[in-house]
Length: 379
Image 1 (tube, rainbow, N blue to C red):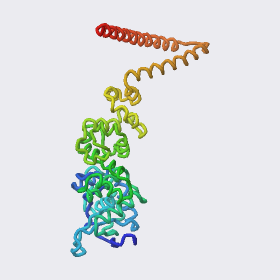
Image 2: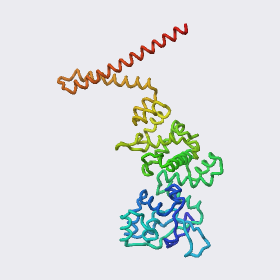
Image 3: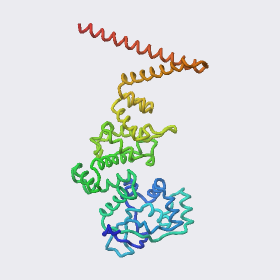
Image 4: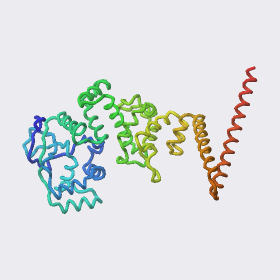
């Protein structure tokens, strides 16, 4: 740890002296700063706490990975000190369960069994102590953004949000540039991450707008990538992809975006199930007709075709059908034996073709009559 002279190693700090980080970047503030039972439930649900409890219970606490902590009352006597755990909150949750300082949440029998049958119940653990929040944030940034233990996109965004506080009094562009410089990144990347986080936090506060979604369903990196498309940014009512406060966020459209990106229905994947399909979605959101089609049919490709305009979409569809029919005619000429299904399908095609021809012909005639009326009026 020689690269971090402001940190000191402690061979053992009592688990009872350690506190959870109320600004844990893995969770929104209302969870991280909420009651311990709510935090434990979230750790169990989202963070695989069972595995950590079993590991420590069966093998003890690994000294090579000390908890990273901040001394909250430096002048207190050693046994009266309180430390905030900035890195290692999942392990702290497991330790507090194993020492029975906190009870397992109700209904979690597997956790209860692990606690009761534990071979090891560490009452003290090694910690790396920092005096300064900024130093530990830099240390974490190295490990989790550019270093060896990468966070996911959502955790990176929450970490950036914490760092941004130091620059929040500057104009937004200046603050983003200063933060980007500190972490060795780009201002547009930082801004896009923070804007996506503002959207995500709004959705979570609104219980994901009543959609059948939970935090685990959200792939934050897809949400961030969506803001790379200016059409989607405009659709959401954002000033830009660096609109980090998202004051004018269109909640109705944000709900639609979360629906299209993350909601699975009837065992089917979400409408947009990979990042490369965002290009089509970006074309759809500028066309009211295409948006209506997407909401009704949940068919991305059909909606994308309509985004070109109904006339162009129809022309493309007719061209495709014509090409398929020519290929089919070629196959018919080479077929020697026919069955009932061939006859049935050909009847369906003929019926559909007649309907299409009738609709287009009558529509074309009406259009020509309207042109003639307008010409006569003009004369």
